[in-house]
Length: 300
Image 1 (spheres, rainbow, N blue to C red):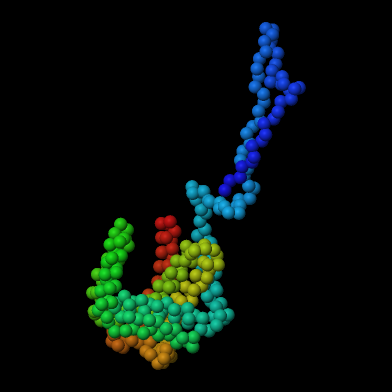
Image 2: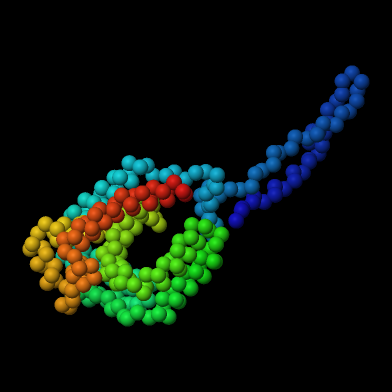
C-alpha cells in the first residue's frame, strides 16, 4: 500500500507578477520570454514507520541474512548441557523417563509397521510403557513396499530421495520375512531414542524453526538428557552386576526388557555383548547431529 500526497494547486499569476517571466532585452530592445521558476516535483509520501497496518515490509532478496557465529552455537550447546545436568536436581524424577519413552515406543511401532507387524505404542502416567506388536501380515509388507516404490517414482527427478525410497521398497520384503525383522523391531526402541537425540543436536546447531537461543539450548538439553540416559544404562550393564540385576527386574508390566530379548531370545549371546554394541552407538548422536547441522547450513 502506497500513500501519495495530493497534487498541489497551480499558482495563479497576479497582475503584478504578470511580467515576472519577461525581461527587457539588451541593446536591441527585444522582449525575451523567460520560463517562470517551477517548483520541484514532490516525491510520493513515504510513511516514517517501516510497517503500516495492512502491509508487510519484505526483506531485500539480495541482502544476505546474518548467520549466527559458530562460537555462539557452541555457547548455547554448552548452556543446554548445563541445563541437562541441573535438570536432575530441579525437574521431576520421571521427566527424563517420559522424554525417552516417547521416541522409544514410537521406534518400536514405526519399524514394526514398516516390516508388516501392526503395532501401537502405549505410555502410562504410572511409569510403564510398552508397544503391542502384532503377527506378521503379508499384505501389509507389500503395501509398504508398493508405497515406497510409488513414492520413488513420484520423486524420480530428485535423485537422492528416489534412490533411498527405491532401496526401502526392495529391502522391506527381503527383511520382513526373516529373523532380522524381530531383531530390528527390538533394537528400534533404543535406536529411536538415539535418533531423537541426533535430531535435537541438529536443531541446536541449525537453530530450528525460530533460530533463538532458547530453542537452541532447549534442543541441546533434550538431546543431552536422552543420550546420557542411554550411556548410563549401557555402561551400567557393562560394568555393574547390580545394574544388570536391576535391569532384569525392571520391565514394564513384568515384560522382558529389550536388551534381554536381544541377548537371550534372538541373538543367544551375553547381555554385556549387546550393551557394548549399544554403548558405542550411544556415543554417535552428538557428533552425527552436529555434522548433519553443519551440512544443512552449508547446503542452505
